[in-house]
Image 1: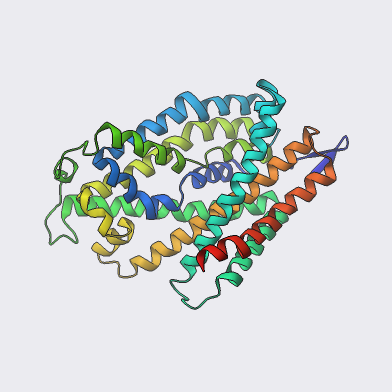
Image 2 (image 1 turned 90 degrees about the vertical axis):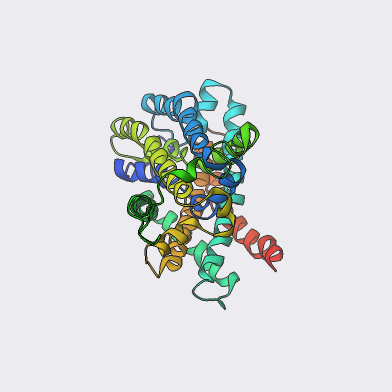
Length: 352
């Protein structure tokens, strides 16, 4: 970060590709790999339409198009909440900034706790306390180093998730069309309408699932925060807005399509992670370890993004003179201390 006219200015060290992967990776979380069976259980195969509907609404009506247009006009703020300040009311921006900070205090810590649990898969006797402290320290150092260091780390976190989903889709189609792992008998597409039909949960289940699906798209707003630190912002914003959500739709809908096509939807709850089951079905014996590694990186990615997002919102408060400079720096660091305290006291007491 540099200073100009006594106000902090963000350094534009991110590349357009890093910005795109940050937004993409932020929206692909642990839920897709471990919790996708919940929404399928409520609505059946029609969950495909729910994912498409929510994604298109977010793109066309609400977040991506509107946010992208404002970012194109003024990409230098570093916080989407500044647009609420400018176009709605200063109070709206103030509330949006602090809501984001407190949200990620909770979400970030839940991701750290999840990461410590995933580490237990390989090291059952590992200390949850010390592994959590090490994770927080590692992510803190990455964020303190520079925005470029954060972006590089997040780029590879996102890449791991993207590669896993692509492999899942490819392997799924191999099972569907060639019957690999199914005794040589192609599964076909009958599971989409068998076992009660396509809309098994009715409209009630369909709309109920959307309340969960909306949360699964959380993270695309990181586009609005990272725009303040990307080189050639207008060009990067146009490219990202046009491509990110459609890529997310492809990954989400593609993965869910494969899952509900290969397996009867009413049997998924007993299978555990469908990703693990699919990888194992085609003969990948290390499937559980692979997916555990992927969800570990997904959890680290969520915590990493939380630190970045909340610290930039504190900076935005300073840039709009809602906070003194020293106080904004103090609060950015206090966020880390609160995370550590929450981990040591609150979550540890819940787990044990």
